[in-house]
Length: 198
Image (cartoon, rainbow, N blue to C red):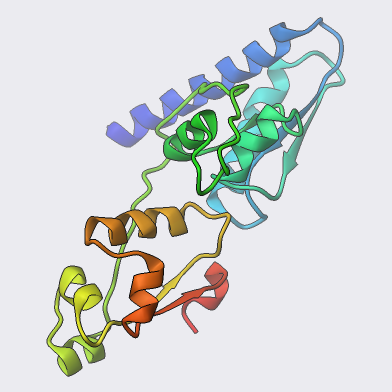
């Protein structure tokens, strides 16, 4: 029942977005750019699905273009700079963009963004240790592992993703910085998602 309610909520939200976009201008045809993420990502699927729901609510001749790049960090910038009319984003990165978070947005504020719909997907940060590492070191919690004399190799997505600042916050909660971690013998590797399993 809950998933049916969520689907209805999202469908109604998409129609509401379409209506808002259609009434924001005149009744003439519009070309609306929808910021997502690269092809194959769940956000691309969301944007393509929303576009199909929104298209019928727009004036005749209107077009929806899904932008197959960007993501949680870049999409608030794309909307603020009018490179996208609407985009998917995370709550945290949107707030960081509005406030000009110093590390990610270098203090530059992006105030021309508004939240229209939320709760599309739940995002979690997951830390995993290999069985081999746990057996070899006895470090069976993230805290033990990161603070140990045998720190694990940390593999995460590259800059521009929401992952590095999230990992930085986890490190800071343990009194670490990336620099301290590396100085203590830890290794941090940043690669694209397709390369992480390798």
